Image (spheres, rainbow, N blue to C red):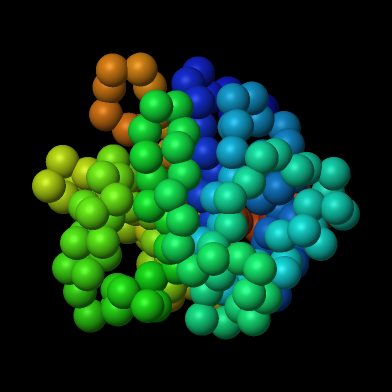
Length: 185
């Protein structure tokens, strides 16, 4: 059954690291969903996205940032995205040292007046509200460092409400295909 999102929703992906099968499974799933308006890719596999989007026929509006494993400098290492009346600071996170602390990330996003901070690099799904802002990492589709396997997130922005964050993971499906299931963290 196709997922239906009732408010503007962004598909948040990171760290595919060339694992095209996992990315294809997610894009095929997203193609069947209603309400996903944007795709945000947080680096380390930036060349994977156009290739798999072409193959799956799924190409929503997207915003991409470069990670430490990406070498195409046409993409910025950080960017601000305005979505559904909110501002989101997108980055891979390696420049801000997210393995050690979120302090630099919080300081930079405060200067940009971001409502949400979206980052990758750690390969672990995570979200928290810090100082009134959403801080979100979708995990990794290619090289997860968590027991749930490959993960990604959806971020829904309801009018006059806090964000709705949902995590998803890939599991074995029928006939050797991958299936997407919601993940409870």
